[in-house]
Amino acid sequence: MSFIEDYQRAAELDDHDSLAQFQSQFDIPNDVLYFDGNSLGPLTFASREVLHHTIEVEWRERLIRSWNEDWLAMPLRIGDQIAPIIGATEGTVICCDNTSINLHKALMAAVALRPHRSEIVVDINNFPTDIYIAQSVADQHGMTLIAVPADQIVEHISEKTAVVTATHVDYRTAQILDAPAITQAAHAHGALMVWDLAHTAGAVPFNATSLKTDFAVGCGYKYLNGGPGAPAFIYVAPQHLESSGHSLQGWWGHAEPFDFEVSYTPAPGISRFLTGTATVLSMKSLEASLSVFSGVKMTEIRAKSVSLTSFFIDLFDKHLAHRGFTLQSPRSPESRGSHVALGFAGGKQLVDQMASEGIIADFRPPDLMRFGCAPLFNSHLHIVKLVERLSAH
Ligand SMILES: *Cc1c(COP(=O)(O)O)cnc(C)c1O
Image (cartoon, rainbow, N blue to C red; front, side):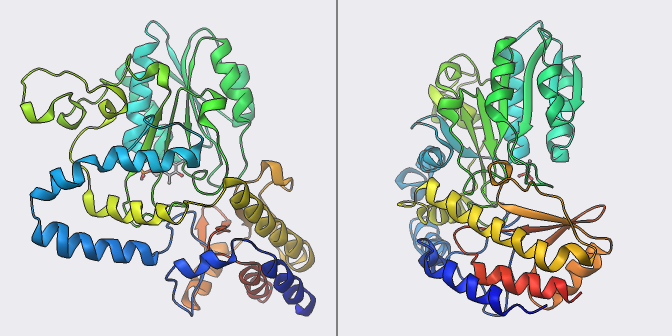
């Protein structure tokens, strides 16, 4: 079947794309089509420039003076930059560690706030690290981990539940979970809620404040484009800031780290969720890539994301459905995040073959191909080229 009409349609959609100019802020090689922004965001020109400056000036010239001149303030400053992206207010988000560690801190803090409760409820289809972390917290407290599919979470929450945790956008299918229903169910039983925003932050709107989630964590290197190993973030609701957070106490979370006190006094506010030294180079890269988001509304990002994934699904129906591919992401845009998953026997070989041709997607066992549709650098034209290649497998 011909793709001429699809190329025309893509050109029209790209002409009306208010975010089209953002593509030029990313330094993606010309011979690469990139559909893996959901796993590792690409390099921004801003990150490269800032990293050069950090290395040449802040590190080489200013040396240790840079801690006081700039670096010590970074976790809080970058947390405040992430806050609007997840609907949080100033002083409630801090940038640090990785998602696994931040989830551990959030769950430990939550369990400490709900002593005498014996269960932790988790989505069984969650990204495995989230389940491992939840299991370890349960084991340390002699609690039971209740791992159930997302649509059964609500019915498994009870007076025994200390905390519920799930990932807002499913990493395999891109299904958006019903965050209001799950959060309300947790609260109705006196339990706390921890949302993982790994596949949300930077692509799907989330409002931590109005949702009243107790904690949230998320990734810096996916849709936020911070670079490999970029630090993650943790959000703590204002009402828990002073009453929790001694879960992994290190000197950066101390009220006066440079007094070198023997006894631990937590810092006021969100800073108590820090543990040790910030990974400055990675955090600089993330700070630069976040600057790309300033001035863009999450509603615009969402509209572009929906347009890309809907266009992909239209082309799937036309060109791929009868060629052994199955759609594994929700059809309804309201329940779909920013990637599209296709089932395909032999998907691993196809993903590898396409990568060798410069079309980069990813694969999750047993037979799932994932295609990230990143609103800031992917276009409708990219999607036609991708589907044309898939149809020629
Ligand atoms: C990507 C991802 C992570 C990654 O965790 P790290 O500790 O940063 O390696 C965790 N949870 C979810 C749901 C993810 O998608």
